[in-house]
Length: 421
Image 1 (cartoon, helix red, strand yellow):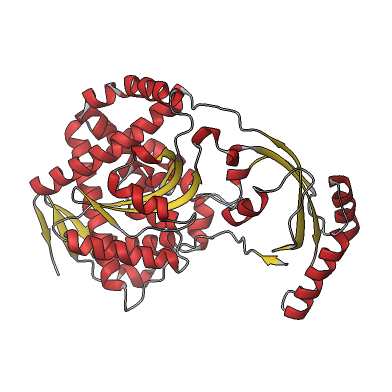
Image 2: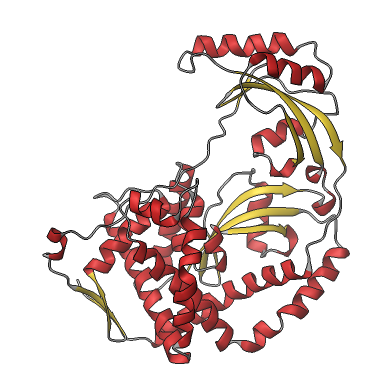
């Protein structure tokens, strides 16, 4: 049997605003006042284009109103964060601005291009990205200064977590991406749930989850595209556990409301035996890649798959697979070593995990052609617990997510916010 797996990376596209002479001539209106500080129509237009870039979604007549509401709320929240930083210590902002460029480069630089190059090519203002990064960095310091007792307890919590992990190596683990949405007066809970449902549908239709998380999520994981990493499933909130247990790897769950906050989760991996799970095994594989001469022809695709199946049918060693790969002349590297099964794409991991050493897959269609993959070596998973520093970072992320939502709600309630049509 010939299997086809499409393993194509998701590319984020940005839309950037260039200020032209015509744009300067346009009337700039105040869209909202946040404790007396304006958010203008120009600010809103710039942020709309940044949102379109980050989420990979075009802004159309059908979705523009929703995008405008979301962009305005993001801008209001950023004003509140900056104002809170100024009130505590103006130097918080100067430090955040000094580090903002590095964060922007880390977040938006890709494929050998700097963030500035990507933003410029997509007509997005670098300043918009810098403003967001400044707000995010300042907000971290605001929370640390406002809740020192909670942050001072991080080291002890991490130490306790390390001890607990040592006693629960085989507990099931799940790898998650998250988007955390916080309702507001302008977007109450029902509207936030509706937005979450729209996000889920958009992701199911191909929109990049990580791009949406970077713009919409109030969690500290937003800067990492919502990546939580691995978590023991039984330690998650009860309302998360059942849908995660029944979801397939790669699925996006329907929105979950918990304590007035809305969560969108994507299941990226699962280890039934936790740190002792076989999916953590390190493997070495050999592959033979036969290019498809005409990818647009279904007949040639099928012929190429059958040819590879026939040529590899009697191969019994990785050396033979490697020799065939050289004969096919695809230029693809044959031997891949030091891989963990759970680092592979879910579809590919499902095919390789059951193999014993010396066994091979059926032909699989990749972008470079059909491949047959043989398992050469397999080592049992080594129990490698996270370092204390890693656990401190994880505990810090969790604490930040909780405090960020709660404190932002408090700032919204005490602020004087005047929205204008």
